[in-house]
Length: 183
Image: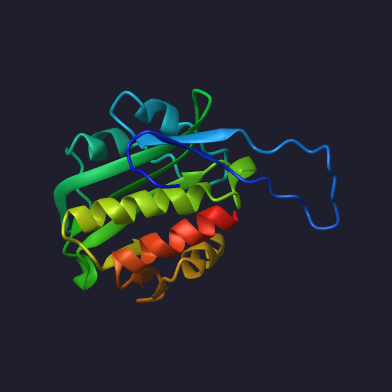
């Protein structure tokens, strides 16, 4: 899982408990790369009805025209692709919100690729970008209990009823790398 720009990582198969089919095919190779403005329409359309994600402000956000509260201009968006089809994304920016210097704005992974390390790898890349920008303390507005559990597995702690924080982006990146390899 090393590397930051446009690298491919093989996602591990997750076999449901009690099912040990030796013939089951592993998930295809997932490629990670920075997203650009031309990718956003496909990323916005990923979430299924009823799922969080796919905010229509994503294009304006990535273009630097939409600014979340106390956000600073630098921002990043990573995407995960299976073949040429997007299967997930994560975006973040620098901030002054809640005493943090980085914020995870969005993260989404299609259901069939969850628990295969894709979300952890996307978050690791946002954490490494944050470190490159001089940001260490990263916060996230928690959307639901599934997200809270994911963030907690990656070392986030409660900051308030709606917010969680990673005190050290480097520790987050290391933990995400371990979790990503474990699937």
